Image 1 (tube, helix red, strand yellow):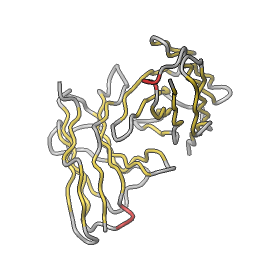
Image 2 (spheres, chains in turn brown, purple):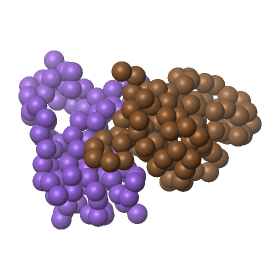
Image 3 (cartoon, helix red, strand yellow):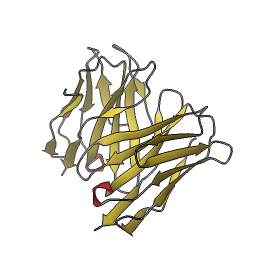
Length: 113
Length: 110
C-alpha cells in the first residue's frame, strides 16, 4: 500500500551541483506532477506528465528538467542547483480518468548552500 | 490566470467550536475544487472533491461548498478537535492542472 514514494527525503547541495529526485507510484496512474512549496507561496507546479513519455511545463519550470520513461516513475532533475531552489518538493499522481483526486508523496526537503 | 486566496491565513479555536475556512478564486472555468489537509512535515491528503456541477460535498464532520458564480468555496468543520490541527489548502483544477491557495493554518486547543 505504498502509493506515492519520493526519494530522497532530505538533501543538502552546494551551489552548482546536480541531483535527481525520484518519484514512484504504484497505482497505475497516468498523470504525475512535481510541485515546490515555499513559505507564503503555496504549492507551485514545476512540471507535469499526462502519460509515459510525455512531459509539460508548469508555472515555474526554469532550472528543472523531468523525464517519464516509465509510467510509474517521474524524475525531477536539477542540473546546476541554485540557492533559490531551496524548497520542499512534492510529487503527486492521479488517475486521469474518473477519480480526479491527486495523491501526494511525503516530500523532499532540499537545501542549496 | 487563476488566482486562489485563502482567508484567514491562520486560525486558533478552542476544542468543540464549529468553524469555516474560506477559499476564493478568480476564474470560474474549473473542472473541480479540492480541499486538502497538510500536517507539519508531511504531504497533502485529499479531504473532499467537489465537481464543477456540484454545490457541496460532505465527509463526516467536514462539509465543503462551491459557488462558482461568486468564486467562493467554504470548508465547514463541525465540533473541532485537537486532531484537526493542520494546514488546509484548497485547489482549483483547470485543464490538467491544480492551482493551490496558500492555505489556512488551523490550531485547535484542548
